[in-house]
Length: 111
Image (cartoon, rainbow, N blue to C red; front, top):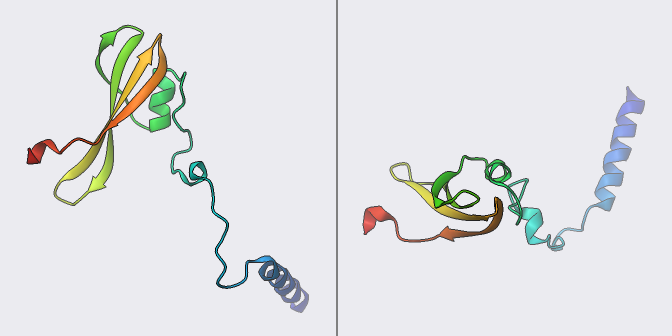
């Protein structure tokens, strides 16, 4: 039992020796490393891959087959009384994601 405690103490001591000294600023991570989603949007995705990356179904807005515009309503919380949603418009050309635009417009309820 004593040997196990000594071994665990030695491991913890070696880990603390490798830690950064108190008061230093940790190195800055790139922006893409701090994103919460696992699969970012990328040009060339099809509609199914895009829906999977966003974690929600896409709603058809308009366009001919293969050249559609879809809408993803992203629920980002809000107060307990009024939910807050951002609208993300996705442009597909030849069945592949060609661009997207988030609508930061005014809330329709206050217009």
